[in-house]
Length: 408
Image (cartoon, rainbow, N blue to C red; front, side, top):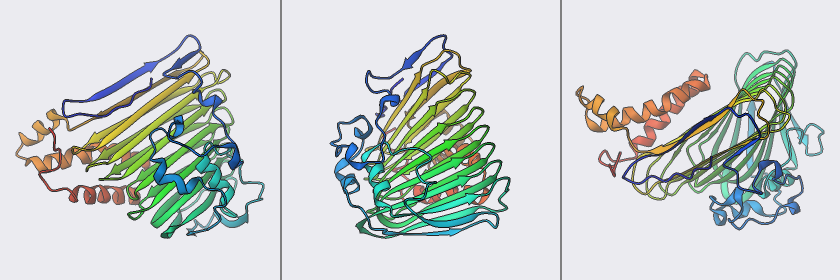
């Protein structure tokens, strides 16, 4: 089902469905809009310059992203620093390295520009059977929004390895980026990408994930800073028995555009995907976009998939668009479904807290913390969980007490 949700003071927009089909089914798809038909290419010229009318750009402020569509982006513009676990290797390789591009092809012009522009890539490799003893930290730091930058990172988890990789985005930038994740057979890898850019920053991040036989990938995206941040995680199963958990947390302030477009391609049998994204918005012109595309191909029998997006509007003037799409080409699946909800504070929760003597402003803060708490715990990295909770508190501190929950 395809739902665009924009709340008004009157209430909550909700779509919830669960489907187990007995035949080929396309839920919410517009004819000609199937993700199976969407163009992918390493060549920039294969993508026209977006106008904003295209499906993949219809929610985006293309005028603000336009510098990332240009040919000839060659500036490095950002500095990448890696602090690796002892078991992990790090290399800087030429763009011709055969390991690059294995996770898939770019799916839009900004992603193709990132591929074309990066003359080198950082490759983080977890050797076969290795268990990383600590988190590998990748710090991507920008120094200016004046130059258009490109960057390329590959995380290669070899057979039966286990690892956690944290990707931190900091500083000021205008950046188009490629992040590739290749999880070979039996690998277990967690990727956490935190976007905490300075004001004025524009970032397009194309994440492409290939999940091998019996591999497990946890992919978490956290977005706080920057003027425009658009992240497009694509996950493709390349062998049976794979699992992917895609988590997202975002907090949009006045004037910020935060967009997360996901695609899960169930291209083989017996795979499982779970998607959970939650966002809060506050301030005039705050805009969050979540699009979740799931494709179950005809040969992907015994698929099990579910996706959820929830948005909490904290003030007037904020807007959230939520569009889950589910395409099913076979009826021989375990289950498939999605849920989307956008709304304001839960009156029952607030009443419960206030009836126990908690002031209204603090009660509203507790509701926001509770909204995110379960998702943050799912990330499963204690030091990151604490950092995210502190950042949410800082976001709430920016509002005057009377503003929190305005419009009720």
